[in-house]
Amino acid sequence: MKHHNTFHKRESYPTDLTNRQWQIIVPLIPPAKSSKRTGGRERTTDMREVLNAIFYLLNTGCAWRMIPHDFPKWQIVRYYFDTWKKDGTWKKIHDALRDKVRRSEGKKKQPTAGIIDSQSVKTAEKGGFVAMTLVKK
Image (tube, rainbow, N blue to C red; front, side, top):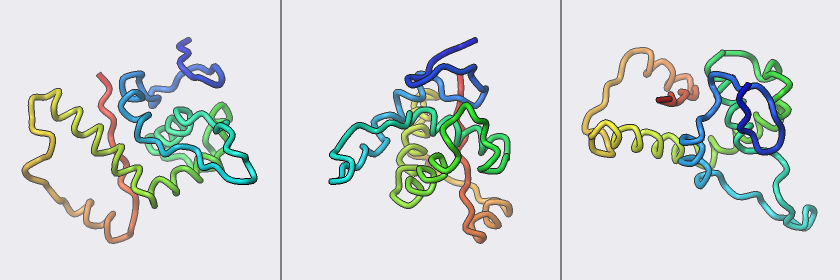
């Protein structure tokens, strides 16, 4: 059984972030918001586990309410998914991972061409979120 989570231990899923992926992503996660109500206390939710839950959901196609119980509550996971979609965090994460993969393959950071197929257009027309693919080596 592998353990790599900060807050609690659980058996890992194939969709979990590797330590290398987490090191690339962690600086891109927005800091906890401080407010008068919270007094600026530290975030109690493990952001790596939030991401692991999101990647589990995207890879398995399960419903939000069916995210396994060993992840943070689905409402918390959904909150961060929606917030990061609105504030551009997902784009930053995608771009950082894409750049890292391209550099590891000896390519330029930015692709020089793109391909759009009919499925991409259908997804974009519906306003759907296209999941990023994490390359695990």
